[in-house]
Structures are given as C-alpha cells and as structure tokens.
Image (cartoon, rainbow, N blue to C red):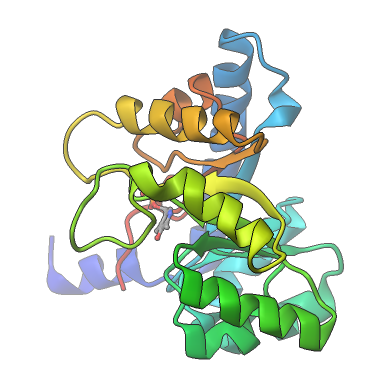
Length: 239
Ligand SMILES: *Cc1c(COP(=O)(O)O)cnc(C)c1O
C-alpha cells in the first residue's frame, strides 16, 4: 500500500468514516444488549458512554444523530473547545469527565460536565465541593479506584476506598453516585471489575463505570452500569 492510500484510509473527515462509526456504534449496542441478556440483566441497565477524546465534532455529531447521548472526555481543555457548541445544538447530551482532574480545573469541570468520574483525593473533593456550592451546579460524582494499585495511575487505592467515600460525604458534603476503574493494561480485567463491584456494594453505590473496547462484555457480566468505548466505535485512534 502506498503512503498516499494509507493516508486516505486514516483521514477522519470523510462521510465514509462517519458511516462506519455509525455501523460500529450499532454493533456495540447489540453486543451490549447480548452481554446483558446472557447474564439475565435488563439491557437498559447498561449505558454506553462513547469515549470521544481526540475525535473532532464532525465525527461526534453523526453519532448524536444515531441517538447516542452519553460521551466521555479525558481533558477539560479539549472538552471546552468541542462540547459547548454541540450541547447547544443537541439538547439532552450527557458529558462525562473520564480523565484525571487537576484541582485548579475544578471550576471549569463543574461548569461543563454532567458527571465527573475521576474523584480520587481529598484536595479535589474540597475543590469540587467549593465549586458546587458557588455555582449551584451539581455534577454527579464517581470515585475512581486504582484497583491494580499501579504507582503511575490515578485513583484511590482499593484499601482506602471505603474511608475516602465516607469522607466525601461527611467532611465535604458530597454525594457519591458510583465508582470507576481502569484495570492494568495487561493481565485479566475480571478481578478488577469484581473488586470494584464489591467496593460499590459495600458502600451502597449503584453505578459502576467499567469496561472498555477490549473487555466490556466481561464488565457487563460483573455488573457494569456504564461501559466506556472508544476504539470499538471510532476504530483505531490515529491521533
Ligand atoms: C480512551 C478511554 C476509554 C476508551 O478506550 P477504548 O479501549 O478505546 O475503548 C475508556 N476510558 C478511559 C478513561 C479512556 O481514556
């Protein structure tokens, strides 16, 4: 294959790219429904969050037209550039922050996101609580758990999760709605999903954001209420 034809294949601007995104979205929806049914769960109890980092609005908008309303972004700055215009054009969207949040971006995060999935430390809880007070806007909050206790990864260590969740309520007055995890890139994901589900149950939390393109049927089997899919919808990332 020549360099030119390769470039044509990966340029994300054509209508053909949007068409295959829609086809992959539809296939992912079916697979979610099958995975839920296979373990006796109501397919409606699992929501698909499209992870749209690095994707331009031209790739996102056709998915909205297919009825996709939940999206996850990793970076506050990128989300600020893309989403206000999309939200104005399409009421009913739900934007979720699924990447790490710096305390100095808490203000913008509270302004922009409907769900913040990555609360993982007291200083951030304090900043979010202050902004929620000030703005009178209350995004739903999940605590991210570093289920693999990986040094480089964000998230509360699993052994500290119960105390942190309680502290969010008691000390900062925050309501925590669920948990999120990103298992280690290698090895079995299932023990991590099971651990997250266990921590959620112990704390009476109902929402579980776990499972990505490589492992979402397994996550659904272990109780995921939200799966976050990027490559399963957009194909391999080129950016
Ligand atoms: C990119 C991303 C995803 C989606 O990953 P895929 O493997 O492309 O499905 C999910 N969660 C987070 C936090 C991400 O950054």
